[in-house]
Amino acid sequence: MTARIFKQPKNAMQSGKAKTRDWQLDYEPAEPRVVEPLMGWTSSGDMKQQLTLRFDTKEDAVAYCEREGIPYQVLEPKESIRRQVAYSDNFAFRRPEPWTH
Image (cartoon, rainbow, N blue to C red; front, side):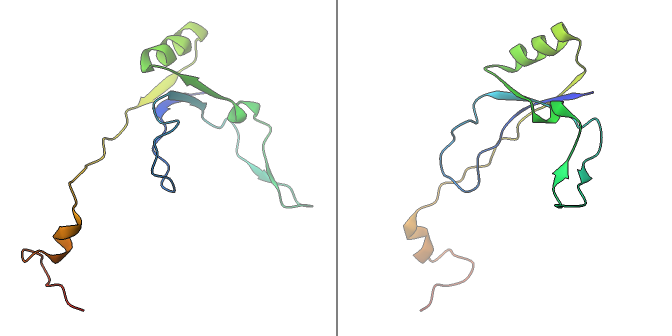
């Protein structure tokens, strides 16, 4: 069973960055999920899918996996591209299409 070590991305529904500074360790599914025929719920017998561990640094997460003998994969976070935006740019003459009412 392989573990993934990654930084959780920013929530798209919120502007804050809560819970994005920690490194997270999740296990890959060992068996596929099954739809229960009576109620239609999705279930699995793999209990490690429910386990999530959080670490302050990537090195702590890697050390934990090596100490416990867990094969792991580190996924580096992608840096977002930030550009400066001002309200007055909506009315600038250099816009690709002119502003009209």
